[in-house]
Amino acid sequence: MSLPARVATLVVAFLAVVAGVVYVVFGLIGQKPAVEDFRSYASNGSVDVTMMTAPQTTVSNKPDWVTYFIKNPATGQFDHTTYFEVPPNTTVHMTILGYDGCTPLRNPLWGKVMGVAGGVENVSYFNKGKTTPAQPVQVFNSYANCSVQHTFAIPGLGINVPVASPPTVEENNNLCTISPCVGNNVASGGAPHSIVTFSFRTPNTTGTYRWQCFIPCGGGFLDGNGGPMGTPGYMMGQMEVYA
Amino acid sequence: MAADAPSANTAQPVPSGRKNDAKVLLILWIVLGTAGALIVGLVWGPHMPPGRMSTSAEGQQFDYQVLGAIATPVVVGVLLYFGYALVFWRRKPGDDTDALPLHGNVKVQATWIIGTATIVMFLAAFGTYELVAPAGAGGGEGPQPIWKPVGTTTSSLTSWTPGTSNILQVQVIGQQWAWTFRYPQFGGFETTQLVLPVNEPVQFNVTSLDVIHDFWAIQLGVKADANPGLNNVAYTTPQQIGSFEVRCDELCGIWHGSMYTTGQVVSDANFMAWTKKTAVQLADVTKLLPPYALTYDPTTIPAGKIMQDLGLTSAGGGYYNPADPVQP
Image (cartoon, rainbow over all chains, first blue to last red; front, side):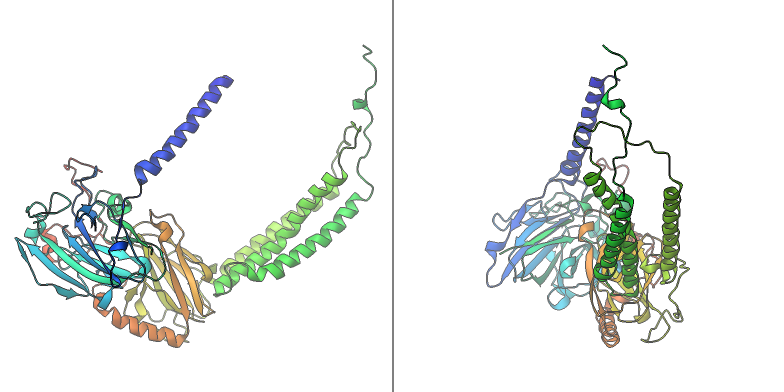
């Protein structure tokens, strides 16, 4: 092979490697999702944050992926992101609207409510226009009952909250199909869902705390932990604590 | 042109070194090598990681001290010869003669072969002893360990008392992306906290619920792969009260870097108090855990009727219906 040919081959090979790296970084891993900033909405040492789980992501190019949404404090709309920002030393009153169906926990330990105020979450269920009274729950049996759909866990703070699921077969067969699940349409906001509330304290020091779901809900991927489980903006994200 | 005219390049080579180079080099090497070995082994050595928080960590630090002390004279010898050659054997201005032809030196060759062979053979014997004597040196030995701590038994897997030969069992469970720890001798509770008693031998039973992780208790000098469906046993005896880091040392997914926690070594009394308190706190979820086993198969779960009606009889992760139009 002549020298120019060898040089050309080397350059092409180098560019191919660079293109591969760029594809992996930006195409597969993706860019950081938008951050919902709740800091200016905190008052008297507390702030309200509302999230939503959905059985699919019809607003994205991955419509089959389960996902979380976060309610934008300024617009009131549910944005497709899992990153939010809260102030330190503040009580976060979290509400999670659980629109997905039940899935068994891989590790039943994650059925235990941990690291939140009182060690309990309050759960109510919505179906056919009616909402049940909220009941405190400390632990879920995700094997015996259709009780858990996902978890909201911040390992760095010892927080683990199972997100309750609609409890019956009929409800699980009529889940929200258009996400985010808003409005009164039975195919969307009016579909069966749980309402989970709990509170926890943000740390005194600033920093970034990753949160994730501990249910292998990434269907179609190795061990169920790929896809949405490993992609920012779906079933995992970050809580950024800054003043 | 005069073809037979002599040139400077064909001049007879003459020795360029000095007469006592070998002696000077040898003396310098003995002095600097000895000093370096002593400094590395005795001054730096006691501060080498992973410290002395456990018997296995102390053993590893001792290994590093010995290896460092042996390697230092070798490094010093190479650098010394390199530097000496640069300084004293440089080409003099105007000197274009060749170097002396080499014809070999039996003494040098024999010394080199015997010396390096001795060092390598010693390291092989030393390394083997240091792996066997301290019961695997804190490394994972697989499901059937052949090196066990001397004086320990597994007389009971359901109870444990400080100061007895019955070894403390701690199961380490890796999962994307957290470590959990199960204590079968205290009712089988599972927790996110790793607490150990001081001066008590511990048997870690390391496994995984999904992909391959690696349990690395850094300051304890314990490191064992966590494989799904496999029990990997590692031993150590903590000998200092304090905290230690636990990290995953096998790339296991996007949050691999965040898969860490902090463990605690406490007194026997504090350990027993902690187990008692934790067992009570986790009693409601402990009864939902699968019976204690060395490995777990999440694809087989005791699914209730409603779960069966929904076709959910596994916690192994679902798969898309092939007929689904949108494949990941």
